[in-house]
Length: 276
Image 1 (tube, rainbow, N blue to C red):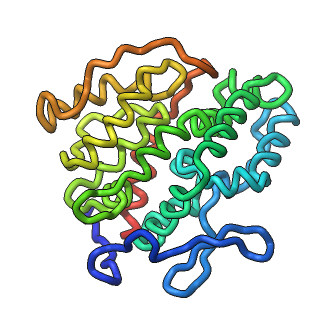
Image 2 (cartoon, helix red, strand yellow):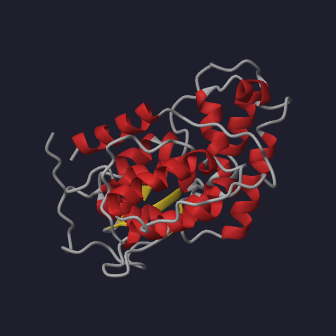
């Protein structure tokens, strides 16, 4: 399969401040993209379906998905796996950059507190606890997205020190190493597929440095997959490229740890590249 990149309009990518997010009259977050107002992607933007064991779980989903503060937070950790609109946005470097601009300019302490609260709430028997125990894929993705908000906010907002492009945007559009974006799914508990060959650059190193800090917490999905991934990257990029020796301590909050299958992520990324 040959992957082709869409040429950036300015030849070098957008820079911070070129696009601004604002709220439309109906409360929907939008981003200005070359003069056009484009709605920002949202998590779980398709039908929730009826694959729930209780009626309270879809109610919980509807409640947080319509919460104004939640939508203002634009959680990158939930967009990665659950948003069709984000999948489409990732095909356009300028639109992806605009989305990351918005996601990285939110009031982080307020958003982190909200995601932590939602991670606790979703485990309750009065909301989605029974479905989480049964590893319902949608509920598991929501839980992992809440838990991984902090590491993915920090990693998703990293910029290449040379180009000032977002590291994630560069990884997604990396024609020479199309598996570079797999790294970000580690934060959601998805193991790095065998044969992954990301570009060994400062973006990868700094992203894994962020992840190494959170991987020491057993409540983070990262704790299950970081060590193996770090060893794999050290074999690819050099023996001391990333910190591979992380001691996992007991978690300080929610203690469940769920992960999605590797195949799903591979399918997502391959599908994305097929669209270029």
